[in-house]
Amino acid sequence: MHLLDDPVPFLDHPEAVVRRLAISVCVASGLTKDAVGAITDLAADDVDGAVRAMAIEALGGVGEPALGALQVARSDDDPRVREAVATAYGELRNPDAVPWLIALAAGDGDRAGREAAVAALGAIGDDAALPVLLDLVADAPPQVRRRAVVALTVFDDAAVEPAIREAARDRNPSVREAAEMVVGRDTG
Image (cartoon, rainbow, N blue to C red; front, side, top):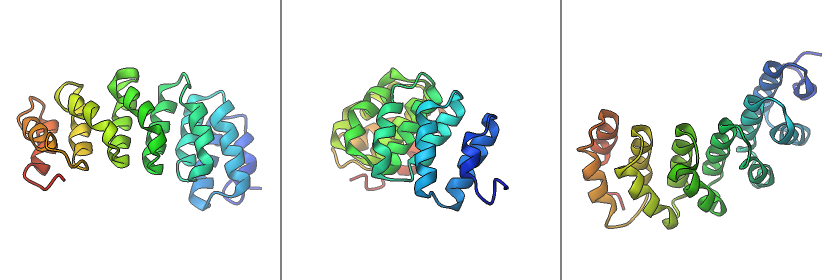
């Protein structure tokens, strides 16, 4: 039996690199019910954080059946897993995740997790996220400010255009570039 022919049995392989490859093959070949079940187990129980994160990313493409696993993975100790959870919520456009995403974006996570949370908040477009995104576009690490500029473009609020115009004068070139791409564009 070869991994490319049937990746599901390899999701139990003793080597993390093989488990990650098996997850990739499962996703590429279409997630079967058996694969989703095994990947859900990996997301919750695998000893390797990179495997758990990859499993969560894979589950982001499953839809509603993934929500329970995402809920559990929110409290994972590995920041890569929390970043993957934020990304999955954005892909699912899950409005129930907005409070958690706001907390992660506002500083409860590492930079990559915060970026993923900001992107997810933009994808979801819930008005509850607007205040934190306006704060982040003005005062956060540059990568987070840049993501906040892009996320703000989905909101129809009078505060968005001035915030983006201010970001076009940001001290960081990547933030300025992101803002300049949307300044003057209809943001509502």
